[in-house]
Length: 85
Image (cartoon, rainbow, N blue to C red; front, side, top):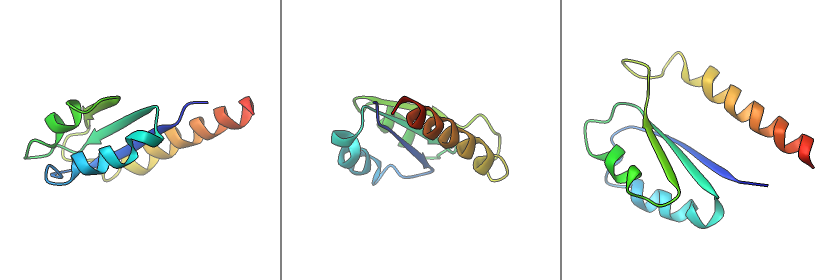
């Protein structure tokens, strides 16, 4: 079973590397969804090992779509993991 860490962030360049480093030993992969940061958060994430960082495809942020999209991702992941047990 693989463990995937998921993080949504915006303008977290100051903290993101420490955050990712803290969960890296626990995860097989980390997926970061950057919410159009004005700083170099996305570049710092992309430089980390086992980390896949993307900018949000939603212009102006994820406010309306975030809950639905991430709920669907977590729901599918949980269902998949429960079926394989």
